[in-house]
Length: 464
Image (cartoon, rainbow, N blue to C red; front, side):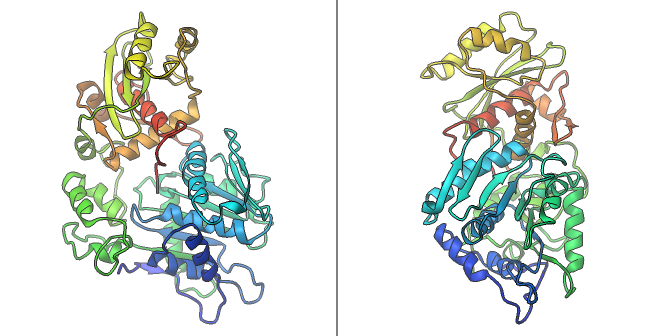
């Protein structure tokens, strides 16, 4: 079985609520992996004097595909079912993605569970999504801006995918809300990042320092291989991957054959980050790893695709790209200027999805082609409300899908050049692809893929 590199050990004689957590997981029809049990035991310990949670800050560090997000749902469900009038918050790498996770991941999990009859209210309004239990406790998401959480109470907060954050923006938005709530806790979950993962690297170092301190208010667990461990040494894998399937862990969900295949085709540093949970020393050679991009070159038939269009700032390069929810991506057309563009977009959208009553085209309503949205709508085209927030989420989602080799990109020199020259532009909230003379194919692909994965009826969430 996998063994943590470091962990907070149980305090002898201290009461805990692990049994309640297990009951919640079973009601969600989830097995409790061994690492959940180890971490859940200390995370739910109660201070002997106050009877409140002993650890206000919980830090969980595991390799990719270790069910860390699902563990976050278990903690939130426990609070929702067993405590009254709790304010419960889930955040992901963007506000939009957090809302999508809540509705497309957590809600279906509840609907299939024994606990769904105890859900008393569901709000699906865009930007106000929430789930309320019969205890009066509500799970919601919040924006990533530093002021978004100020003035709002928080009883339990989850910061997921923390390695993406370059600063403490999410924590700063949530922490003040915990100060007046007895028993408030914050759970930070992540896989290793890189040199730019300042917030996560700092928190993990703080967590490691807390281990063994009997007065610490931080509970932590960290699964990782030793630095310098050989990725090809398969005897190391079961020691650091808690969800790897092997004779000692038959319920593991990570298949050794898949890990082996990824080792063959992935950039070695990125494989080590994802599977050994060891941070890369630098930001690599760019936002998109060349080895991962090459591994995604695979032409597949488009299935119910989304068409997106974007251009360079000067509109000299215009790219039309289609993508579907399965990750198939294809450049449909590269052109210069916008003369005849609207008519051509209508033709392409109708050809690819003839069953739609109205053809649909995605574009960035804050980008250089925003001015054609009204003309497309007059031509009978459905143009989704895709603005700055969605653009940032699309940029991050596409980059992650490439790193995880979840895409099937039809080879095309225009999108290859865009990926090779990709640059990130920091924004107030997160980051987004920077528009350059050759970025349009990459940006259009990101928007098409993201919309295909998040529109109504999309098959599954991004992160599990």
